[in-house]
Length: 325
Image (cartoon, rainbow, N blue to C red):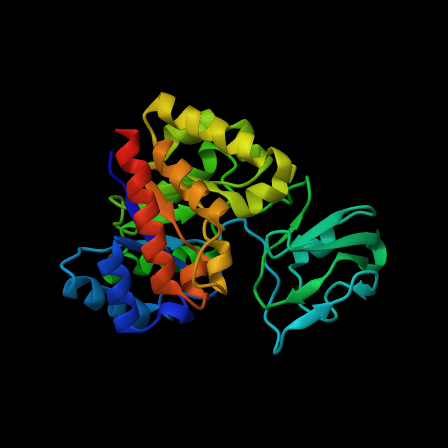
């Protein structure tokens, strides 16, 4: 068995020599996260990536990760330190989507940055929260209500504009976040056809309870299932995440559907030149379990060692794929 390795485009790897080294290490495609910007704004990075790939004789894949129903905090000028026990009012120190402000109730737990920080809603009418799990908050990080989903359309106006530009910028696939069922994927397919981009692959991200409950219809309606463990690890108790990942992989294998595993695969390499033993075991297991695609996110987009991360990623994945045969 063989598979494809993806990195994520971002400031840490936005140099042609860095990208070239990543392709030389075994990377075959990249993801561009449009939760942080527009496809147009990423055009220079995309062209750089394509030049680097051509130098290594690679025809690169490019996946754009749409906004969809995902919720993120807004922009602010400098990192904010949230101290456990302090009280804050949502929307004062950092912008919060209106859907969150309108949808919270007393007792809700708000998870920020894939659950690395957490707030407890003490008075929803005043948007008053207590910091339960503190740390440094950066702009445009995810925000979710633990155990609940807030209503939202499958595609935003910006998503539709990005799909309009996708064919001319060499996009080969589209990631739809927080897929809630067949209807979400139908909306994406319809929008792609309307933009003459119906040949693009659809990667359906499983990262909420609804997606888990409707997994079989999602498998039947997409091209690739993405086990997106960041928000999925917020949607289920973290200690149950391995079991959930195994069940998704088993369902995909039974249906003959390709799947991708992503998020925190080599998380420590954002700041360390060598991964942990647990991380390489995770990558090996995902490859040996049949993952056709593996994706690095923050490790290449914002980490200090993007090339080294891709080298460890590729070497470990190759071992897993070889042993799966």
